[in-house]
Length: 574
Picture 1: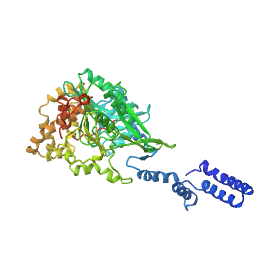
Picture 2 (picture 1 turned 45 degrees about the vertical axis):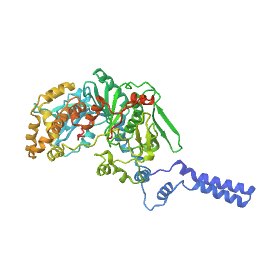
Picture 3 (picture 1 turned 120 degrees about the horizontal axis):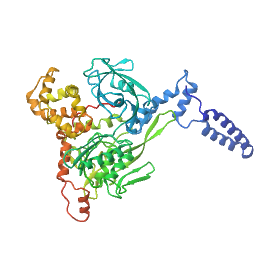
Picture 4 (picture 1 turned 30 degrees about the vertical axis):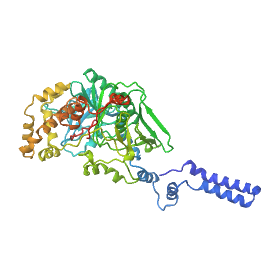
């Protein structure tokens, strides 16, 4: 039940005092003046500030039935906020932990990566030195029981399994495990602890001097994670870097700024924001960046948003590196999270951000029309934008020029320097069926089971490459497996999709090792046209870099700019 606030209790006393004051003043200032003053005071004090609070007050005091005002407010607030812009949102207290968890960089759990490709919980990886590792859980184990509850064959959702495995730090959970080669259940007790969530999911060398880093979001630890990865990659010979921001929907603004700083020389504008009062806050590089010497390619697509676009825009507008891929999402609004006393929060848009050349890359929206805004990506696909740069139109009034002479546009995402269309060449009917029915992925789970000892021994990308290259019958074995699962071979399709299927199989198998996503990208990158194009650009540049841009400023010629994915199944961490 809604409780009276202090202001509600005091209001009658204040009004009474105001009336008494009015009568007293009336004796000195005259009747008409006193009555006018009293009416004004009563209007300002007695009436609620707006219709919303007035309506709630009337419902609470006069509605025929008792109403839980708090519940009413919980349902009304999301509707009110949805009328502002597509990114302002009300977050109920019950959802705060789940929403903040990926950005906070940690949670309390048991430290395993699992999958439920069937109705069985399969442990794909165990976090080294984590709670499950210490308790004796190993990759390949099947979780049959959680405490006293059977979880095999029960049609329990993956979300529910996560809820049961997670819990307060220091609490215990008992697991009954089915382990290959052992007839009875293996019983272990795991003491839950802090589990880090890595926002940088892959870091590996692709060629002799070109490294690849995949950043999935901008969490509190992203900058630190990147510095650690770059330090390790330098010891392996890195001189050039591919930074993959595809599918990265954003996160903390300060992390994007800190990462941009690592790649820029001193005194370069990174981003600026403007609030409703046109107060402008600018962020500049300080010259301490550890990666300003690296040749750089940044990958973006329609899933790259917010902080990803801040980073890509800062590098593009400063002629630092080359942006490659497809047009980014187009989110140029800054949200501030404002907490309420009950643990809920309002994520409110408080400013717009602009790239160094003054671009707002926020795509157009109509307040209250979330459906059209959400349909924008689908509309791009229908209008052929994923396949042709010529299908993309920009307002010439939003045209800007970088110091190096590159033409860039605002008003709807970051347009890459090099556009790479979506490649569907090898997506035959056979491939779409075995992948769409999850047969391809399930095969790799069974393969990992059969080769668990060898996969657990993998520690480096060289180990993984040697192991996978030794299995020359992988694709043919999979074709037989798919036939047993009801997909008959189509040999014309198989010939066309064979290279893609082999890469996909090896990639999923690689993810079943301690290398996780680094093992995945080691095998899949030759089939990823965007990564292949980035490697080519770093080896034989066609787009002026920051050094070439400086040469342009001094009057020297620069090179002309030419005109111009694969599905992955996520495994949750617990």
